Image 1 (cartoon, rainbow, N blue to C red):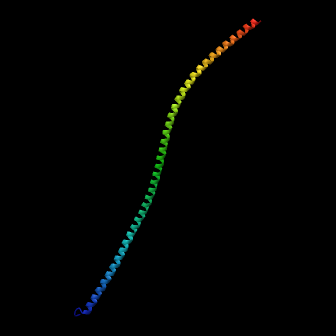
Image 2: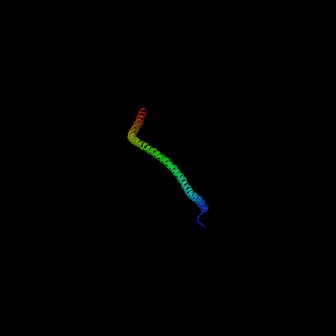
Length: 149
């Protein structure tokens, strides 16, 4: 073995080149598998995040519709309270009017009572006078009968 011949150098260079290419190819395959593994992991995480986002979006939508329903209920209750307040105020006004009318009617009743008492007294007086006149008439009828007889 005299040394390194150009043919051996060519084989060594070729072998080194083939080894480098194979190493580079193997490293590329390993790297692509690693990239695929990372992509799969990140895809799973992305799918989980998308699922969570969809759940949160659905929950937010549900909460939004519940909030809108509650706001509608609050508006209905406010309207009902406003109507009840208006009805209550009108009932108070009506009660005041009826109280005034009641006082007026009581005064008229008392006045009518006093008039009735005076009419009853006058009627009693007229009855008394009528009875007196009747008695007088009977007496005068008897007197005239006795005079005629």
